Length: 277
Image (cartoon, rainbow, N blue to C red):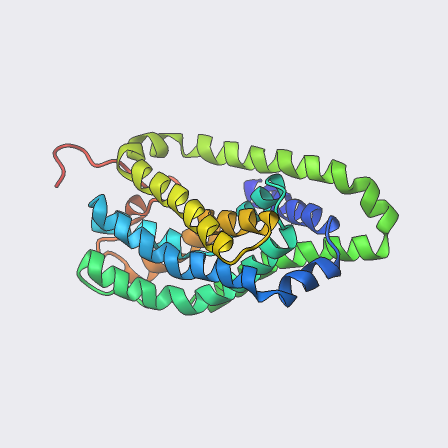
């Protein structure tokens, strides 16, 4: 049931975002490279570096550190797109950057995991191919948006009539998905709040500030400043889960990685008991 309803809900959210956009909105975002450059600098380059520094600062165990690093290397996704809309940012820019960052991730994630894994675990992590995954995530976010834009182009009156109701429904679905996810992993959240909470909170708040500073340094308008900040601070947990699955499949038990050691793995993370090393 969930495997059917969740993708449909996510697809509806992205279609609702597309209904409010036109091809001209994307053209404007692509004709001015400064916002995309700001996002790439903040998310693709600075975010993994900041995450690695915090992993060291908070002295996270190697396997938990790898999980945080994987998550930090993931591009933004539906979450950042919806949050951009709620913040009255540049949604077309957010979606454009999500697509671009997804492509960049296929190039940056393998070497970062190789170097980071060697530093955190004492040995290189197994090589994983995420090209297909990146393309799949791009289709999951881009195709429904394009359908919404097409509806706006072909049936403008219908799109205008449904734009605000669809936005309210999409916001409600987003909140529902978030609430269900938190409730489903409530015990996991409680068990690991003390160890992972400070790291992830510092990482998110810090990257929101860094993204804002980078965008303001490029003298971007306010709507694009908020977009770059959100894209820097919100990551695609779905991609993180998928990459974690690839790592688990490739490594088996050789590196000590398990579903219980990855902070983004559903039902996976457990707290360390006092008697454990």
